[in-house]
Amino acid sequence: MKLWRHSIKLTIRVGFMGSGKTAVGKMLSEKTGLKFVDIDILIEKADSYSLPIVILGYAFKPETNIITGSHALLVKSIVNIKGYPVVLVDEHILPSVNHPEKAVYLIGCKHPEYRNYTFPAGSVVIDPFRYIPDQDDVKVMRLGEQC
View 1 (tube, rainbow, N blue to C red):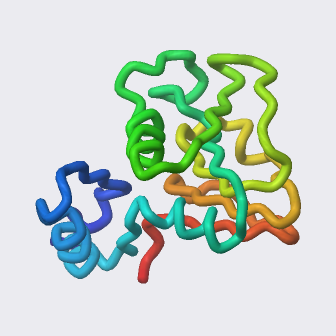
View 2: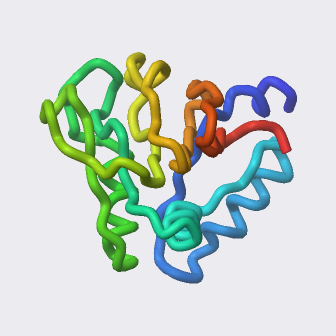
């Protein structure tokens, strides 16, 4: 069981309302000791801070421009269905896309250059890969850390 616990990095569950996504997520959290985070955290943070949502990196794999199979595009679609606009930014796919200064950023692809990215003060960064360092005046939420 201990080997299994440490092999899980991130799971994404998709399904209809009432299909058990939250129940399964909470059960996995209890079994693995990892945090459970619902996708609605993006919306909650955007609402509570009155900030736009930016997915930083939407390529399927780091340092590529392949988007087929990208989980970031799936997250964007779900958030759009809930009525919230999302800005996609990925220099590997479309260089020089303007994005809001202060925003709720979801790291969608683990491009190495994001580790040194300076986020605007007042931003919230949701990091499922747990590789973005702390920054002054920026709230970094690393998903999957131990409870």
